[in-house]
Image (cartoon, rainbow, N blue to C red; front, side, top):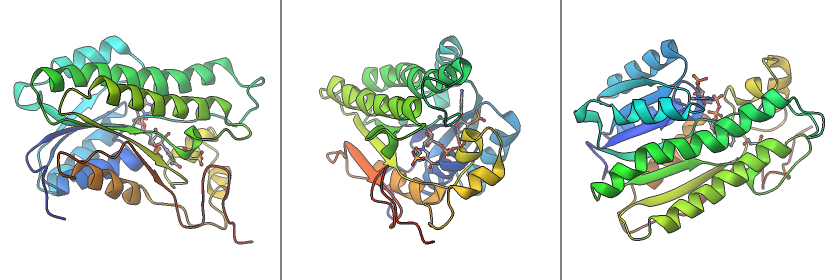
Length: 258
Ligand code: NDP
Ligand code: 8X3
């Protein structure tokens, strides 16, 4: 793929694993210099090395997107050579538990909403103003989900958080219509990453079972979609992209080989 984004600075949140990690690598392959963000410093260092191995520059930002002050301070005090962020992949997120909404643990409900909804807003609020002020042809990718388009059993809070991501993206797209910024909500279906292990509170057997009888997407599949969107000509905006494995139609329907 010919790169239109060579030399641009990208910030990827949730870059320590899964989709974010793959996005950091794919953007680096297209010549972007990448700021990788997440909470686990050791994992960030590994991703930073992967970006460098792909021939780009990399900078690590240890931050918890739930902490608004940390997000604002860390992003606003980036070294000058890293401060013109043109591509934001706001990907950090999680699901925790599969309880019925009236039985869910308050601390886990807070964790999901604080990360997926408030963390997303804080990240946008920290990055987008400089895109507007500098009149940059910015690209904002929000990581939604097919779960944002339909609720399912045991997923009320997560699904609500991903519906919120969709509407945050829609609102931002409207609020930036008079700028060069484009906004895309990516809505993946099943992707095998650490996601299900986190959702099942570390139970790897339960997590593996989610993908029994169906070939899920890989993190690289989603990252290639993100890279494609980021590399489009400036006048093309894809408001949303739904990406599922072949045997999954949407959040509720999938064909499982018995
Ligand atoms: P992973 O668990 O592999 O990655 C999640 C990433 O989010 C990690 O890098 C983690 O980093 C980061 N993260 C979580 N909480 C925070 C926080 N408070 N502050 C900063 N970073 C945080 O899962 P995926 O790669 O699959 O998930 C990435 C995104 O894709 C999520 O938003 C998820 O909802 C979405 N998605 C996933 C699908 C799937 O089936 N896997 C399908 C549809 C959407 P660290 O722990 O180091 O902070
Ligand atoms: C995660 C995808 O299908 O587990 O956002 O809801 S799914």
